[in-house]
Image (cartoon, rainbow, N blue to C red; front, side, top):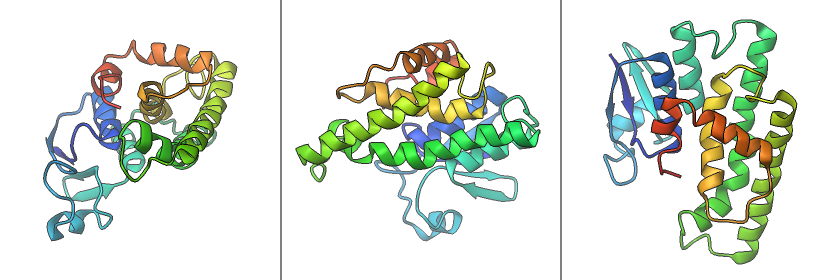
Length: 207
């Protein structure tokens, strides 16, 4: 059986849990990360040398990096509606997944740690305000894309890109800050909320 290592409150673990729910996969999970089993032990580092969650074990395969895990699970279970096999369509989904992991993730780091986590090392007001502005700017890119598609990130159909971006949208909505007026993002948030798996693993009170 598929085994997932990582605490269920982690945004990156929740990507994997939501993907598993969309695939109707059975799995077991062990809590690793802050407040739970450490990710710095030799045993854990032998699975992921970065010392981060999530990690999965699927038979003999051990895999880390949340977006890669999600791609693997969808491909392994032949859910080509979530990640198309056609090269062009697949690239469009993966483009937005990669954007989430690089541009969007990097934009929120300071503001999120300051405002949501209230970390003592992230309390420079000028840097926080700049972080909020950058985060809103990146989210406006998503807003423009959703204005074009009218539904989900790559078009009318829900894909794996919506899993990773849906969790990012939830984090943006729930962080106490001045939010840009992004009506297409908010409409998207409500469409995602019609999916039971998003309500369990995304819009579930966790930021």
